[in-house]
Length: 348
Image (cartoon, rainbow, N blue to C red; front, side):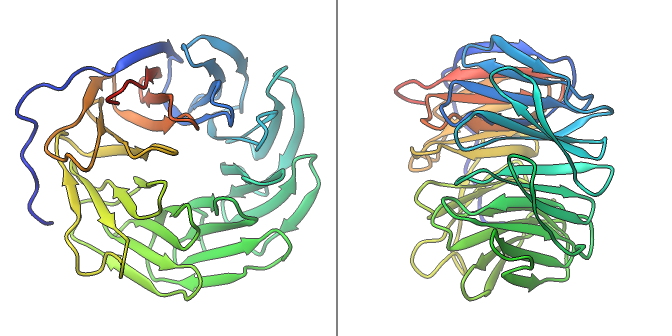
């Protein structure tokens, strides 16, 4: 890896806390509602919590027997989808907590659910089975079995296209076709997919400690290597120029402007002493949050990379970081079941 910057020479100011809650078990998923008023969290034991921005429990859902894996809000915030270890995806009425739909995802472990950014389409992934539904429960497409277990699904921002990843394949789909629009073969294990906001790039974090950049239109890909560990942590900035990645204790940021990141030196942000477990750019602003297995959360301005703007330590390894849509709050969760919500200040 390229030369890294020195650790912060002095302690950084603390992030301002808005609220805190405890779910009592490893929080595996978290997502803000589209209006930024509530955040949903899911635990590996099953229960799903819906919290306000001050950390007050608004509603608790039973989730899934044996454990919940994923949560996803629909575009207007009326519905919350969940998936878990009971073979079904459930669509809940967010206002009442009542289940509206129970969808057979095709295998016993439903690891991914994702509502579309436009309309009310829902993707479910269970084992090698990928399905597309309407929010009312109507099955739109049941796609052919993937070559291996589906490791990630992601919608293209502002479009009716989505991507799925598995060992040996990255594919894109449109809601109007029963087969992939494009399929990109790659002999490796893809762990995570992230679309750039402009839809031009798909970035993947991989088991072999590499990051790939796929050009959606041409299918051309670039590979960035040199990481010490596999990569699950990916986040694009709002302008689609920068991609932040994990794979080490250092936040590595690739500049995709101009001719792209090939042959360039990344920006590197160093403050964590152990491996990263989450990175998240703001939805509209330019700040970046990073979290690690030691429980530290830092907020950075990458234009001033010598040290973070603010920081805080939580109880347990960070599992999720997510900014509210208007960037007014940052939610952080841990493997010990803590949810902490930070309030944005003038600096962070």
